[in-house]
Image (cartoon, rainbow, N blue to C red):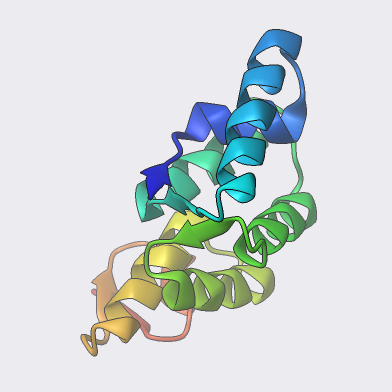
Length: 132
């Protein structure tokens, strides 16, 4: 199984570079035709959220919808997929950053809670506690 970097996903989603978009489409199409999935590391998920929000002006709901579509895609396999799905649920209802929700979800998946933080917004996420 091959893995994708953030920039390939960004080109595929944002379609801001025709040459790179064509390359990304060819790669994905070839993998699908061969019956192979493409692997997305947790770190790529984190970077993708940040790039979409900070570089392309995606709002929270647009980011959530985009990540949800990717997670449900048969062509992609995510590292810790169940934790990332849980993180998206947390992110939808929290004022915390997506990365904080991912940290909380990964800690919960590992059975290691609470996740201690000094971040007041993050401490409002289920499974996170404020250290004072």
